[in-house]
Image (cartoon, rainbow, N blue to C red):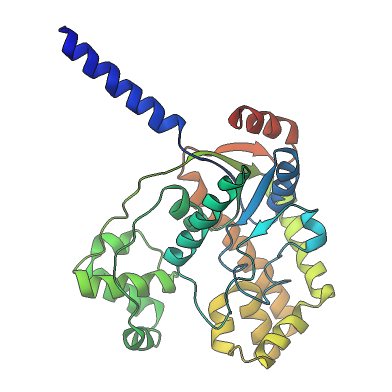
Length: 316
């Protein structure tokens, strides 16, 4: 091999090394609902000088507190938290909006010499941030959305399948919001282009695992606690403040079924039964999403010693 070729190889290796090593670090705490992510993030934030960035698609909204399990000031224990209560629930924060805000906060946290800790259960939000996903530049079409929202889930799926069968196969028929957005994009571009990824960060993704029986018990206990703390009253106040029943329905889970109860469309027992069932279905969807990412390191929710060891190595 010629000297010039060796020099080129060394330069390429050096460039690759510094590209990887100089990437800002982001710690990610993820997993299904009720696995103790927030408590762990606070613990690690205190120990490793971190600041927490919420990755929850509903905790970004003002006033959605008990229904989303939003962490309280007391529970934060002095660890700064970001992207909580940043937009009115009357508005919709898109994944692209969230990504932009989160990446800005990550840069600010790094500028203070702190460790950004991205914590939550909304997988697509997390992936959008850490992989710097580039979304199609197609603005919302309110008139089209209004028309599409009148259609059943089956009709929406058929419409998307006719426009872009490949994209339709990646979405579940029950995912109305994503189907409507996909139709919106496909009508402009012809097809929904694949999401481009290019991670700007060095990440350690920690996933929390918990036995199903234990998780079901925790979900049930947490739901009862939220009801006793005033979740029905929270939904009532949101509606009195101008949040429509329709918007409440689109926010899902607690806000959907409590609002149905307040409208006297279901009984209290039906509300509780529906919530227990639907929250578990949501957990299963979260698990399916996270299992696709082989970069995630999974730990028992009780194994804080191993988690802290992994974080210590990562933050060196």
